[in-house]
Length: 372
Image 1 (cartoon, rainbow, N blue to C red):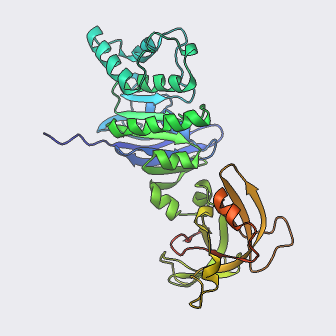
Image 2: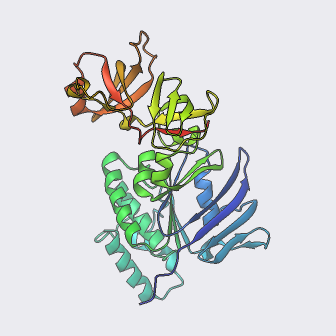
């Protein structure tokens, strides 16, 4: 048996818009790529240029060695010939067509037998058995989403583009469809790009991550690397980090966190000593841990990066509590906190009545250091 063909999507484009200029460059393979960013960052527009629905001002788009767009060579393959399928945020199903007719809409050039074979296969794959003769208005939101996905996949595209595929669904359906998307990604053999502004969704669904801000790529790579070692303060914020401090390097693995008033060890290799304020230290809220009372009284001393902390305030959610902490001394103001820590409801019930100060630990492997 021969090896499966290599999947490759290369994008290097500039698109001038009224409010900003989109300028992106990246490569994607068969591993799903999440595109994360705030509103008006250029996420959807990036997909639309790949699909051929928007024409870049200049640049190049190549899919599996086929040039889809090249401004220098004046190549601009029409959308219908690109073998790219785009799943829109609100599905864009034809209301007057049945499920079956919606799915095979893009297969009019195929023989009837081939259309039927593809329809049967994709209906089974997307769990739409028994719904072929219904109309979109007779379907639930999750069923409509699966029909839109089936319509995208039935054409056997070389690239699958999903624009906020879960945003219109309620919490229960989001979890269900997310699981079905992950199953689809396992068997689909093309390039997959998924746009979202939800950090957790981007992490769960993509293997690699592209972060956009104001039309520019600010981070690109394996998701674990982008989250563990964000390249800048902007990237850290866009990927959900809440805790930052100005910092200066003391040694190759030690910093002084100026805003938190403490010294921290980190496993990250640091640059040579720099002037105060040139670096930023960060740690994600769920990486901060509370040291148990028995450890506090241990003769051997506390673990490294462990400091006394006082609770300033809390914010409760159904399954967790955000605890706002002040290091060094108790806070007299509601807003005067240094760190946010995420604690489960079970842990919060266990610790909430403990006398303060508590001892909190910022693990060296979770502290990251970056430029401004």
